[in-house]
Length: 379
Ligand code: CMC
Image 1 (tube, protein in one colour):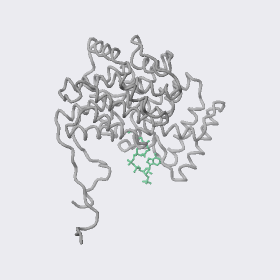
Image 2 (tube, protein in one colour; image 1 turned 45 degrees about the horizontal axis):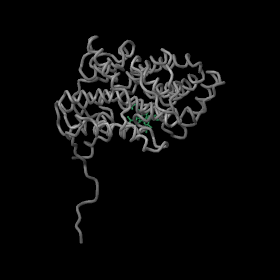
Image 3 (tube, rainbow, N blue to C red; image 1 turned 30 degrees about the vertical axis):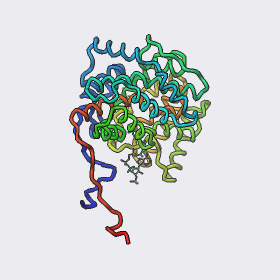
Image 4 (cartoon, rainbow, N blue to C red; image 1 turned 60 degrees about the vertical axis):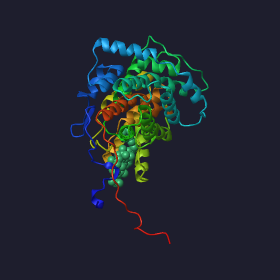
């Protein structure tokens, strides 16, 4: 194989078919099973979107009711998962907690080794229901707080915030959280989804594939970017007494220096979208509602200042992680909990891809072009 045929990072390589989502960078659109993601984010619950990704269709009312009942009945943190989390140091990264929790869930799931479509869907739905309790408990234990039991009278998003903060969130906060979950749910062959498909292609089990996907998501070039965006804001310094304009001026100056120092700015750029990430306008609108709700205009100043300076200097646009990071910050999550929130959402897309891969499997095993020393022999 000649060197020209090597596609570093598999850039531009079409690795397989998928019917789950379509990214169209030219029209700046993202479709889940044919539906524009911004339409789903405008009117559908995250529970309905999860069913859409798994089954291919938006659920009828009775189907949604059945799934909601299942989700509400399976929200509690399993005692074995809690015991495993309690063994982990408080200063380990929360992504390590998420990865470990999913692994423990796999070891304990009665259908762990059953890869029939019914068992796979059951495992996917159990993960969906149980993962929020992992994030909520981990956030609380790091603050020296005890576990908050789930409430069955709240929907997925409201209950997630309830279990994390121990108080009912305002409806607009619940809605912004729901929007983030819908937008993060699926994005075709991104690095973590591809990882899940590679693992599934060996006929390994669903929990192993999700555990591996979490490892891929942790990196700052992928899911870890939402956390890294907040580090940028923190480095800049968030000053609640500053006006939007003052914050924007300071942010622009910071960005100019950072780019002059050839820094890579997290939350900007995308392998597929070169003219802007299709999910950003919807998430930015949700961030703006949070800025109004929490009365924090200076955060929007930092956001706009960085975006403007990046646009002027390099014409690189923000990706979803850019508005998602400050949104989660305003809601009260610690910065290192942002990527586990991404897991809670992407569990839907990953497991839909795992099921799709299994249904038409081919072992994923590419070739490599050797560039090491020529053949030699032991003396
Ligand atoms: N800051 C500064 N320069 C950048 C950035 C950035 N965020 N992104 C791209 N560039 C520059 C890069 O330095 C390169 O310039 P040059 O040609 O002069 O060397 C050029 O743009 C092309 O960049 P690349 O890294 O080769 O492009 P890629 O398609 O391999 O990378 C990316 C895409 C997402 C890895 C990259 O844009 C990046 O590292 N962004 C920051 C991390 C980030 O926000 N990741 C989240 C991705 S979206 C959510 C997700 O999928 O999880």
